[in-house]
Image (tube, rainbow over all chains, first blue to last red; front, side):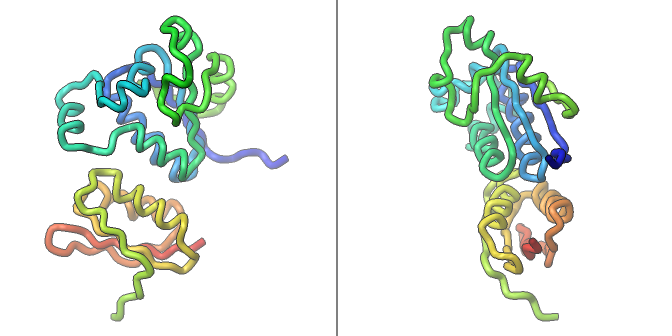
Length: 134
Length: 79
């Protein structure tokens, strides 16, 4: 079998701040659209920003830039990630621990989430990848 | 010099970075090899990013010019 020589990013998102999640989505989606394999691991408070109810109400923790992005109706991270998935190899995984302790199920999160996994599975994917943490 | 015929023009003016590039990537994906796609954008970031993406993905930058307050950027799909 031919070895997959695509460069690969593993992006670990822990923060619930809109600016950090959006920056991670910018990097990840554009990298995916340029031929890089991108695997996101959403964990801890970041998962709050991916709950359907918070996305539909644009209920995010923000600073000044995040507030302005919402006011100016900038295309936010869910759409960036969706486009990255359509146009490239971009996968989004959630941390089973955080989901469990909060009682959230995959259906509570927006549809771009691929699966709920443990860290071992993610580490396996992240092998040889460049790791970005926000 | 005569300009190449534009197959499809996408007006992404008013779209924030990286919206225009995303529009271009989507349009290129569904275009035929040899098609020329033109993007209109008033985003300075995209004016710099689009040529970088085009080079990296080995397409061809046909032109990039500023008209009044926006950019016209044309790309030929090479593969």
